Amino acid sequence: MKTYLKQLFCLLLIFATACSLFDDESERANLNVDYLLGTDESGRIKRQLNFTDNEDETVNSDIVFEYEGDNLVRKTYNDYIGNSSYVLKREDFIYSGNVLTQMIQYFRNTSDGPLKVSKNYYYSYPEENTKIETVYLEDGELRDSVIYRYSGNFLVEERHFNHLGEWGRLFQYNNEGKLWKATDIEDDNETINYFDEKGLLERTVSFSDGEETGIVHYEQELNSKELIIYAWMDGAEYPTSHKVFRNGRLVEYVLYHPTFPGSQWYCNRFEYY
Image (cartoon, rainbow, N blue to C red; front, side, top):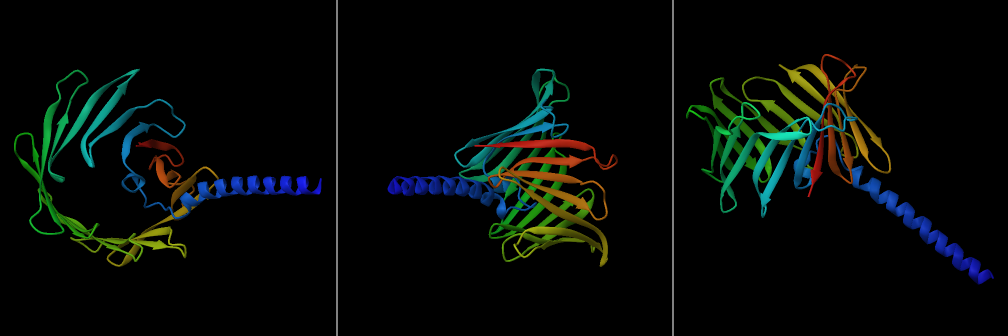
């Protein structure tokens, strides 16, 4: 009898431990996640669904992602009317081997109108860690030229040359590879991300000419199934946005209306392969 009780106790202990481990693993996947994490870091995205708020079940529009091997080859933007949908926009990506060389954007002005070329994006790589993007409208007008510079996998400079002049941003990262500072090239505006002792994003501070112009705080709400991170403007009564993560992946992003505090503006949900 004592042996049986001892065995039963061991089984119950193992079962309880297993349940505890399962819960811990579910939460552990979210422990090192912060607000900076997006769909690119969450895995290969399959679909983005757009709603009016996070309680809405009616899809207003979506974006479908298609791949060949490791390469994204098409993004299809669908608008929904009633129970049907139509393609509003499409982007086709063209490669030479695994190197992106062109993206063609198609757009439809009406639900029953033709899908026409709207813009052409061309990509060149004049030197290591540098990518140049040139954007032309359908009539051949040059709309934008962008130089992207990288340090390994990290974007460190984005510089535009277009009808608005020359402008862009410089990016710096901390030892954990998280974005620490973004600085405007054409003026003294910058944003700095501050992280807590766990390395998680705690607040973002904006500066102009060395003067503080705004602070965004991030608050985490963690349970056994998901992590919710709220972004709050300093002193605000309602959040400006929030992100929902499950198993370390971004699954929902909600933006609140800037002129109607507390009301949601739109909600994006994400599916992955």
